[in-house]
Length: 275
Image (cartoon, rainbow, N blue to C red; front, side, top):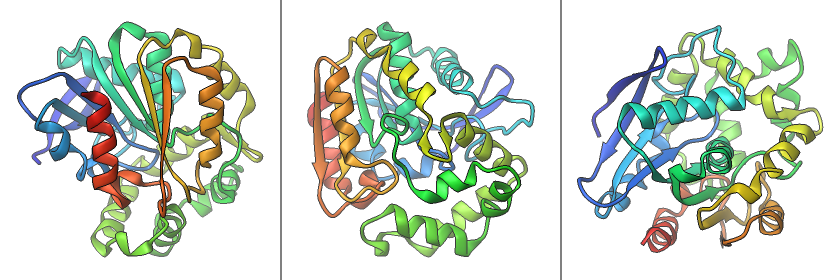
């Protein structure tokens, strides 16, 4: 898919788009990731939908300004600004990991802009997450531990999946090259520290987010890998306790990347739900 760019509140933002008919679908990736993580998803959905996947602020090939706050509010407003710039009044929003948190935030603050909501292993719902993320929030040490390296990326990706064979050398190289881009590491750490601390996902942001769950009008589907170490599937119980029209689906032999590890199962669940 070809790269396209749009300026959103001064931030040059990369996106991919596919499909010419049906409802709009907006895909939001996870922390430190990019539109490439939706490559298995976009073709499957574009047959019935107009699909948009963007590099979030500070990620991929989008701008990474040092003075951007990367707070939940700033990340949410960047996505809403992207939708405004492309004339997307409302959409089915699919968020994965950090993108799931942003999608939840949008749906709870701007319910009229979300028709259906898909939360794929959304971050910041429960407290638990991996030790690597928790220690990366520490001053000084975090900057050392998150310095981009092929070894570090390979180690983290092996933790993220149930079967490491799905991670190619090309994928590692892509993440390494993007992680070395000016401003990328700073943006990653700022994003991480807004909702993760030494004990896991921070209590105050979690409680504030969940306090608005009752505002979500969109039917909601959550998808989790049963072997997810980054965002444990037990966090789905918290969503079930706080959301109205909600269902959860779990994919076995799957970690934190269900759309990459089991694309056929993932795409079938999403397509059926959106239909």
